[in-house]
Image (cartoon, rainbow, N blue to C red; front, side, top):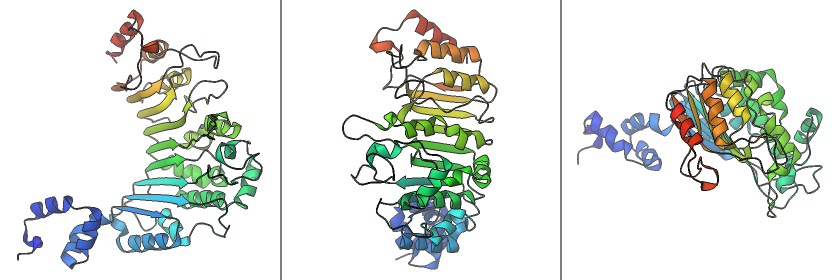
Length: 367
């Protein structure tokens, strides 16, 4: 039987594209030719976690083939009763995250997978140390450092961010299930320099409930941290061009159970595209667009919504019509404006399209 390697190069590439990653790995072990052909695809993305054996395996992979790696996906696991060690993050994991072995790295996806609603204590001073109450009390810098000396999950957050901060190659950062908790790493100059090098960032923000209809947006620490996210992140992202925020609890507006959206007109000076999901349209977004009228090219609020008149819960709620008025009057340099998806209607309470909304839509066509 003729070898598959005897196929024309173009046809061989098409055949290999149809294989699952596991099949490519198995095929690459059969001969040097397949290994040479498939290694760039096999090692393009490195997935690993903070378990010692997984970290060692990932380190071995990038030591041998790190030039092929453009993406790293790291998931950090911990429980509240895990024994605190020094360091808490395996050395092999730190070496991979630091990026010295992956000069062509572009993207890092980071996730902390902590099961706060498992019924156990995760915090030293919360009335109930788990569930939404992990975010109950506000924290100062001294308290954060103390907690990092007590809880392994907090030490892991600190050490993971510290390792990633040393990475000079990352340009895209994807934060899945982003935990709204401070770490002592966030206050360092090295972390802020890391943020300044990023060109794209995605925040998928963690949220949960306590099974009695109370959610994390009723907790003071959760609200305070997110409404000041610009202080720890956005204010230092001077080179960021693309930002995507998916809010676990709706961001926008002020009032009880509301979290003001942490976008300031003077932050993110070169931002070209902004995508918001599960957020209220609000005056802060309008002000941000006004402050970026000459640089922002794409605004996506398709999966956002209006609070109408606020229902007594907030004083700064606006209807879609006023939001559109504000965007139009800002005269931004948008080439793309996405609003009104399949799940969110622009008309209030599913009512008929008013003449005012029709007029606003007509005006937006000229943007």
